[in-house]
Length: 481
Image 1: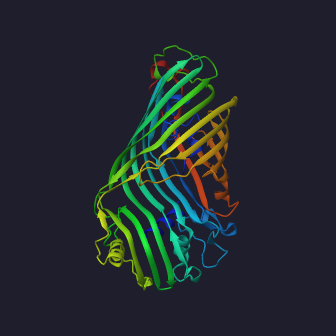
Image 2: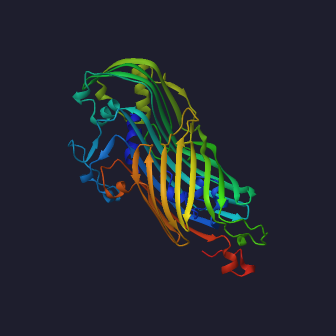
Image 3: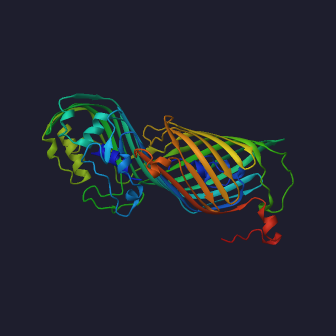
C-alpha cells in the first residue's frame, strides 16, 4: 500500500534546479539556491522576489502515449486523465525497464530579498517544497501494482528482490544568505557564501526494503517467502478517521540545513578600488569566465509528531484471500500487516520518531562570456548520500547558451537527466518576469509523456550603481515598487 502511494504520487502530482533562474547574472536571491556566493557577484544591488516556483516530474516506468497527451487537460481545474484500460493507448508502462526510478518536486519561493554592497551581500528567503523519489523499484512490483494480483502473466513466478527505496518529504523554511569577496588580486576574484536554513516539516514518509521474495500463486493468494523492510511516516492526516488535516500541530518535525558555495572569477578589467559613500554606488564589474562549486541541501528534519516507524524483519507468510484486505484507514493497514506477519497488530511498531535528510548534492558551475552579453554555461549536479533516510535527487548535466541584458534574456539549455536522458529546454526573461523549462517535449508533446518541467519568477530589482544615475544622492535608500 505504501509503495503504491509513493509510486502514484511520484507520477501524477505535479522543479528541479531551475537553471534559467539560477545561472543568470540577474538571479539575485534565486541564484543563491544553486550557489550561495552568487549574490555578491550578481549584477543586482537589490533584488526582491515576489513569487517564484516550479514543478518537476520524471520517471522511467509510466508514460502517456504521445497521441493521447494534452498538457492543458492535465492542468485544468478538472483534469481529464488518459484512460489505462486499453494497452497501447492513454496511460501505459514500459516493459523494458528492470529498475524503476522517479523524482517529483514542487517548490515555491515566497517573499525574499538580497542586497549587495561592495564586497558583501546578504539576503533573506522563504520557501516551501514537496519532493518524492523512488529508486530501484523492481519492475515486477511496479507491474503488479499497476495490473493487480489478477494479472496472470505474473502468477506462478518466484520473484527475488533486494533493496529499493521510496521517500517523500514536505517542508517550509526560512533562510538567511550571506556572501562576500575574500580575495582580489589583479583580475582574480574569490568569493564564498552560505545559506543557513530553519526547516519546518509538515510531512515525511519513507520505505526501506532490503529483501522481498514472493510468488503470486493466483488472484487471491500471495506467498511471501522472505520480507525485510521498514517504513516510517509523519503526515498531516488522522490515521484513524481519515480527516485532513489532523487536529495536531501543523508541523510534524523541525530541523536545520545549510548550503555553502565558492566562486572564482576572472575579471575582464582590473577592479576599481575606490570606496563609495553609498551602498548602491558600487558598480558591477564584468568577468571573462566564472567557476563555482557548491554543496546543497545539507541537513535533515526530525519528525516527532504523529510519527510511526513500522519494521518487518525476515518474516514470511502464505497469504490466502489477500484480495479481501480492506484499507479503511492507515491504522487499519498497519495493524493488519502486523497481524498477518507477526500475529499481533502492534508487534511491527518500532519507534515514534525518525529523521529524514534533504536531497543533498554537489554542484559545479562554469560560465564563460565569449562575446558581450553572450554566455556559455555548464553545470553539473551530483547527488550525495549523507543520511540513511533521505530524499535522493537525480544527477544532471547541462550546457546552456544564453543572451542577457537588463530588460531581456533568452537561453537554450541542453541537459542530460540522470546523465542518460537528453532534453532540450528554453528560458526567457522580460523585465521582471521569467519563465523556463528544461524539457520542451513535456510541454508540447513532442514525444511520449514521461515527465514535465516548468518554472517561473516574478520579482523586482535594482542594478548595481543605479543610484548614481537615476536617483538624487540623498534619495538612495528609497525603493519604489
